[in-house]
Length: 395
Image 1 (spheres, rainbow, N blue to C red):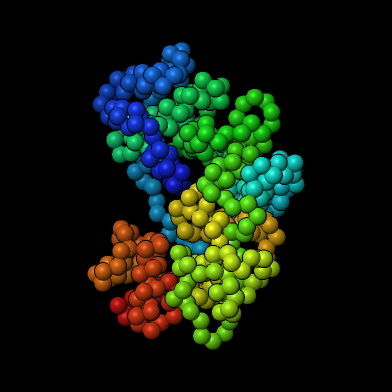
Image 2 (cartoon, helix red, strand yellow):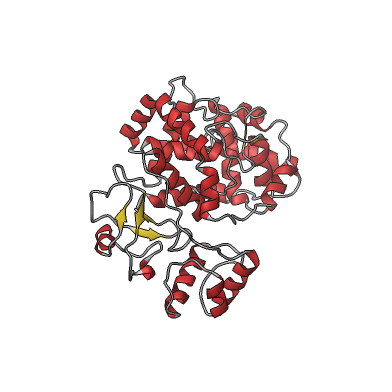
């Protein structure tokens, strides 16, 4: 299971109703806190018996707090992570799952427009197709994080939603387990999203994302559609660049380029050209111009909403492309990047020059990549957004 803190969780917190936002936030005596949550759930329409059943025996899980405090940063390169995550075994199992649940996947695409490969890639990366779903008690995890005063506005609504799920018969307060941050099931979704987008894919009258693959497939499809998925359009395609001069400074997200602009610049596709030349398209170099190159389209933004890590999302989109029939990427020869210490030095130098790189954390995120491109362009270097020792020395 991947370590993640999805944007969906942030959106869920921001979407809290005014009544939830005004509720006591966090901290204090845990028993009193639980009593307040129970009263709030009852005020929202949950029966007193259900609220009592859901919260009886709830306790603080210190392992959850440890995980929350120790969230690591994503320091692997694209080649490192994608080679490990898009393994031969995952490709084989993914293909078998697509065949095994062909009817369910066909229904998911017919109803929500999301292809089987896209759903299956998330399914594989999140939990190895349900094999690794997490062993934290979900109610305790959410109660712990809601009581904690670091992000109560995000987790209290999720705790209340979990109580509602108990009333639906879709969550066992003492038996349901999942990830440390409260995500449940084979595609790791939060309680509010399960309530909003849950689909009974197998027709048993319940939404059980832990045990029912049809439920997980249909729910994931509906959720992905809700994030803005555009049916019938591509998400990522590997490309090759022409020799000679090339507008590297136009690479990166949000450059307002079209597919026709890139084909005019000499970009060619390794796995077939998308039909519409009017599609918005951004050129990405996860590891610089000498490594793999991808054009990404509006549907790629859905991956960024599922998980904010650029390396994770690009790998997930690549995994989906492979499951849909694309060849393995051309790894090229990207050379060495910067280590953690050097990357922080680079970010400090970029910030000193007025660039907004966000936190000095040693992570090559979107802000740092944009700043690197700007400095590469100023220095007359190919502006591909991939920093190396030479750039650091020049700065």
